[in-house]
Image (cartoon, rainbow, N blue to C red; front, top):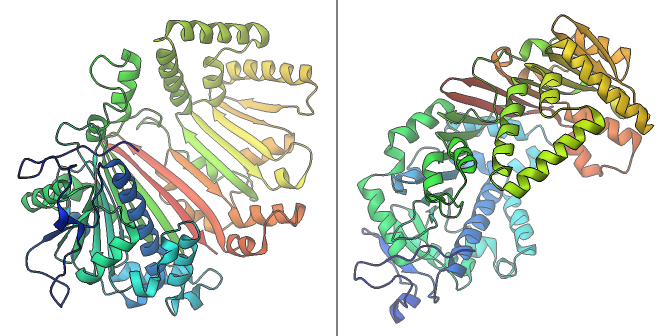
Length: 544
């Protein structure tokens, strides 16, 4: 992994130079484990940062897994809520931040407890913290260093309930962002020795402040981060607050400043002035635009990941003015296993293809080869890309898969409905049908057009079902698809029914333990609403 930027300490010494004998020793704090003034502790000294940076990321990852699963939602009955959040100790110029909070608002604790009770053994696990040791043992199986540790002795006495990881702009002329870990600790003295064991002699520098440990690649970096956060922290930043506030409290959250990320990662992306062809530079500018924020929340019967895009790019997503797809889901077959609806998919395809051509044509030889391939495809098949794909998908597109698709060896049970130029679309379908006939494939297409409404499937039954069905019968679909009436994108997956059908056809395809869990997931839904200011997307898992 690339080294973290080298920084200089207050004494002008390069931060990568040896810090002296005292830096190799973990200082002994006061008896109560806390100090009045922040202190910096370097857990080990190494010549250079590359290995330490990798260790920092890996170590924080291990602690995050231990925190999520070992304390996890299974310890909710022991949590009290309130208190300082990790973002208070992150500098305001952070370009990205993710956190896990196992001490959220009381309502989230209760909701998470009720949600996990739906699953096998959930109630038993919630009674105690045995899951801590179980998960830590799983981590130990893949890490020789962690295998030497004892969770009760080496981790539990000091690990708190909150963890944050921040990405800071490069400093000191570096090209890579800084990584800052923000870890809540219950006892600083025990945390010092515990972190030293976790990182196994290749640890980061650590500074303790207000019950949190800040971790960075070296003393200069962690001290600078602490001092900058004292002047202005991410938690007080208006954009950060405004982006996350509508999403409410949850057990995990993230925030990304996409425009700042492009600047920070510019050199590694080859985005410095003059380094990229115009088409690639334009795509990069369009992709890294605005901000994103997301939160994981619980309800008694479902878990959500909700993501907001604020001023984000319109590339790859429907236009804000695209028609809602929700009404079409009200006429699909009752036994629909999967339904995917997207408005403005024709424009999405056109934009993606235009960007692709712009990129490949920036390399003349590659561009000529691609253009030659497209010409050859048209001569051999009559298909024009991307025009024919755009025509077939139309302004609104709905694809459904019903139970027949998994219970028969003959292609059936799959249908597509599109709002499009039906005359032009039928010409495209005729080309596809001719290709299928020439290939001797055991597949035949059937379609029906009325006005701007096109329906395509493998049988007449498929056509009738997708256009005039009673709607999905599973009651969970309404819960799984919030704000469906205004959504331009929607996805429904009837997970427990799919697992049941797969198991019926192939009894050994899914092991008993996995089947037990899947049978308690009523469905997974996704809805996305796009406005002129951005988007809101919710992925929801509904428990049975």
